[in-house]
Image: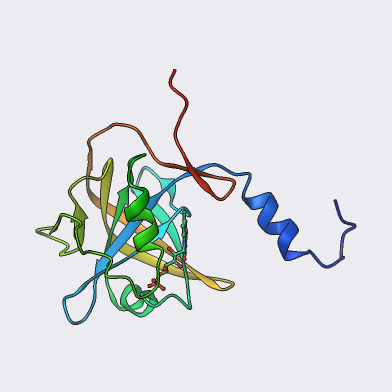
Length: 165
Ligand SMILES: Cc1cc2nc3c(=O)[nH]c(=O)nc-3n(C[C@H](O)[C@H](O)[C@H](O)COP(=O)(O)O)c2cc1C
């Protein structure tokens, strides 16, 4: 560990953050031209039950950032263990992200809901906070469903599965 006040090495920071295991989500919305947009996110976090709030952090230099800056709604789609190709596609700038992915637009919010997700939370954006080079989107859950199954786990820069119990 470094002394207080010393400059933190980015590699050290990344190595430390990589030790935190998380689930993986695809966060979706619809842009001004009614096109589906989305990105892979591990920064999803539950915030509050009453009111029901979640958060997700999006890089301000992401191509989809303007779409999320303009929209009032988003969906958090929790990925299954076998969804590695979906996770990589939605993490690839310029990819045709929704090609081959079955989805429907939510009847009320108009955001893409992925059919095969482990769970989906449809949300209205309640607050936007600047967090360094990311924006923290705080959103109120207006609809949710859970299918259940094997979750995708992201740990030490790789996609993992939970060990069978
Ligand atoms: C497992 C994983 C988790 C990620 N989590 C986030 C995240 O929480 N926030 C974020 O802004 N980017 C995250 N990314 C990177 C974005 O998915 C990627 O940069 C994406 O291409 C950004 O959207 P764009 O294609 O519109 O630029 C993650 C990537 C991976 C592979």
